[in-house]
Picture 1 (cartoon, helix red, strand yellow):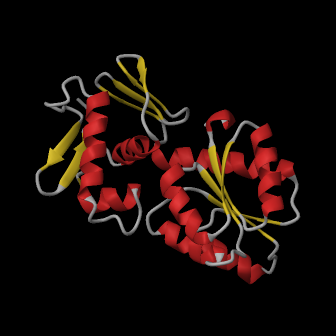
Picture 2 (cartoon, rainbow, N blue to C red):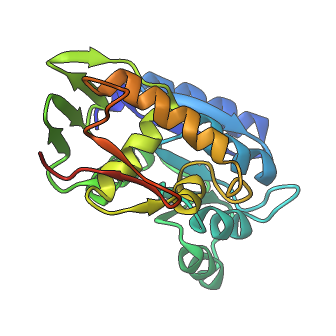
Length: 231
């Protein structure tokens, strides 16, 4: 994934740290979002769909380890812990909860950028080893986040792209409404089937040759949806 296209969520209650990271990451081409509490972070992950999360442990409401645990219930977005805590057991607790990396404050910008590049590579590999998916006239470049139909780029919303990404990850497999809602929207949205229906309909209108007779995203009546693995 190119740096200029990566989205980073910075979660820290220290305004000076957030400002420093926004400036440093922005200078390297990253798009940066900020949250100062754990609850805000959980919401922002669903809203902004970041590619990597930089997370402080000492938040005013939820401890960063608990934020990590809750995220790992439904999201595999790479998490880099950035904290003043340096005791080994605290690092282990964060990593056991599902964090991907741990960097102690104060830190060097060069080292942080190196850790980010590694996290972004892991994010791509989690989805697809070839980083590209092709189905009929549909082509998705999972590295550049580019979606094309008949060689023409199609613009998707962050939620539509997140839904497509999950379908591609499980291409050929039936995914229940519950599974899709939990993986794309997060816990607490399992009953919001209208969200899923609307976004599937939007995806079909943008990707299918005949949206009313879908050939790519298939409905499994009463169960969920399935993306064809091949034509």
